Image (tube, rainbow, N blue to C red; front, top):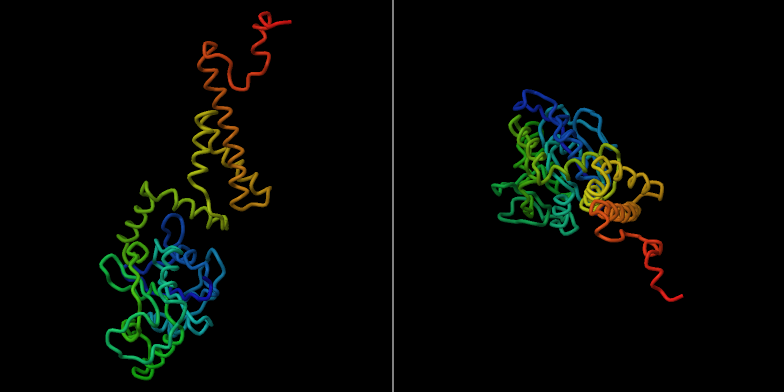
Length: 317
């Protein structure tokens, strides 16, 4: 789904991190900002509100006025650069946000921004956007999809009421919007403290997720947009290591990638190269096993007519 724009707020003071440049802090070898940008790669336009930093993909940069004016001021600055009917609004400190969670938010909006019918209606939910909830069920308004027009409407009303957006809490905006709730505690995890950073760094190195995290990091670093058949490649590496030699595993997978690139790249090319290499590894392993078993096991794999020449005297002439 590409009928949305994204606004990423990356201009906070990060006081609980001692003033560190939080969006640039690395988790799993990638900056927090780059991790968020990877999750919203499907946006038609991505606007980052904050100081310019190196990023893995091009974005539109802007600043709130004055800098440090808070999330509402940042959101208003970002909205000036988007044109889609729906706006994905994200903070830049979400280490586990993935495209799956973004898709769930977009699906929950029903494909429309909605006109909302005004502000102040009690108990209304679902017409003007969708917000992620965390492990405790709390709404996270900086992990949400909003209708662009409802956002502009409410921001305008807040300016009229308060004279400024600087320093105003985000809830003054979100309390007036109809928002569906999407529960996704992992994606809603944010990093406010160094303890949070440590937790995130430890979690991605957990045995259950470290390979996925590493593959995602390598793809981002190399600029590769390829779905990797992790299980298939690991099977190939195991077979090469077992049937040939341990160093054959990384070398074989490298050669598979190289061959796939020569064939034009893409998942089909990788799968075909892996299939051919896997079949070769299986044949190699058969011969290795037969050699280890010794002559008593009979002819090895691929034995030709010569292997039975000794019995020729018993055959009729």
